[in-house]
Image (cartoon, rainbow, N blue to C red; front, side, top):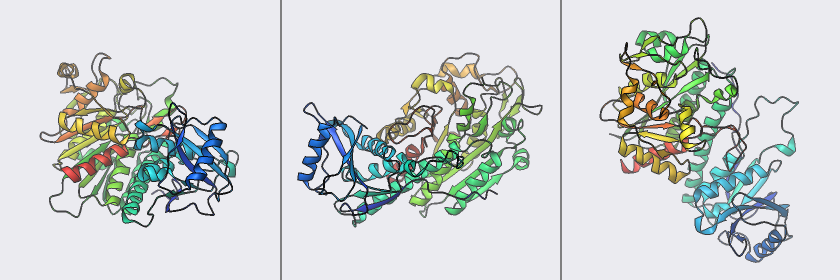
Length: 505
């Protein structure tokens, strides 16, 4: 069992009605226009004459209001802070929650070494500002020794006071509680993804997931390699048998305190490291395959979040965990395995392993008779070819697929609905087994993977498959509230869909 000590995953968030004396920096928003920048006023929280003077100074030093641009100036004597940071919000006509979220994140990243900040962005959208600051301030430094650990001037913001007109109002408190929980869940998923495979292998991942679930009051079940073999989980075993660190299947169940609550199943790919197996990947960039459990990280965080929010929906996460390694015990191209439930599969490419573990988990999840099933995975390089590094692809039953994509776009994770062309299905036929795990060509790889998974989804279940191969991990520079490494996508999409199911069925 892991004995790792939990650490804060973001700054302390608090509501405030005025700028307090212990605040070091005030963060304000600037919108852009052809006539120059304007301060996005915060419901009279800061005196307008002070804001007018600030705007004159900001214009003098070149602030434009361009989205996520940051400009820091000394504070006027009328404000009890050392400095003011203006962050760009872009065009006022186009300003929405996601831009406030990104700008708050950019501000948080620009304020390393600052203890306490206050912000008027919360008067524009409290939830978005809270999430943006919390996630923009997230850092992963667990493996930095004293030689390279960030010093005091590089520490993330420790406290954010969110300025609103009525800080004691129940609505404000409820909004902050929800957004704080969401930010913590996204950061939890990031934490899993960023932990290196030397320290997060299947058994350890299972232990950490179990600890999170137990703390949240969830029912937890963990199947080790013996239980997997006894119960016929051939996909998970086939992928994981090449490693000395054997696979697991974790089930985390949240039961709502509501009779006849809708039932949502979550499934996430948990490959703690993916070498490709015998079909080994190129060495360049392989270190980024620490992220190949991003789907599992997201569903573990989401089911815990559903419990913390007390949503009137039953949610169960079924999470296969394995390490895909080449060895004398690894599965070979040409092997045939039997997925949980009895479907036989010819393994043509051992690097198409995610669909093998997901198929086992999907069949098990469907045994619970869910109304809805969402699976998510860093599944195919084809996702990035088709949609780039920031846009998840969503496939599944048409109505639910479109619903998930629309919600994802609304909350800023921007998933895009994709088809499952019928003509690709026959390319998954095998000459010696029920299915092959890949087609014999490179076309529509993301879509073919979804068609493979469709074979294992029970009839009548509304299903969405979210491919986050690119969006789950940022290997380039930081932007908005997203730093390098794990992003936590698609936690916010999944919890928003579950909330929508709670509200609308």
